[in-house]
Amino acid sequence: MEKRTCDNCRYYVYRYIKKNARFLKVNGKCSHSELKDALEKKKHPWRGDGECDRWEPVEIVKAERKKAILETLRDMEKHLEEIAFILKDDE
Image (cartoon, rainbow, N blue to C red; front, side):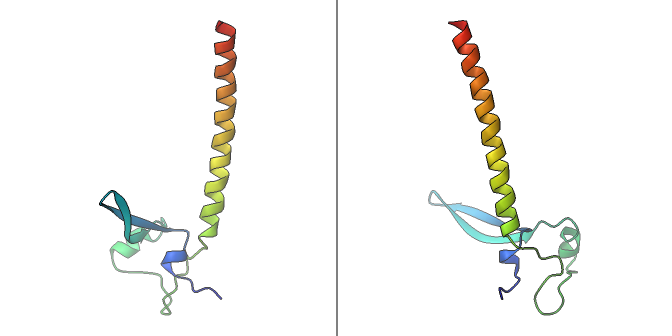
């Protein structure tokens, strides 16, 4: 079974630095709305075994991102069709 760590949690957001025209992953932070304040105050919901009760698999974020991209592409296609119609009508 996969270990539930921050690195594979949907709420973990990586931070990057730019070095020599490349981005390097340096660390990250939790973006869970209930946990932000607790983590800043050094009070965390870990159960003592290094796992967090709020952990959710990162695959959820990947699926949501893919769905949002597909919706955006469909919207762009519709707008491009409308623009092409306007341009063709203006000829």
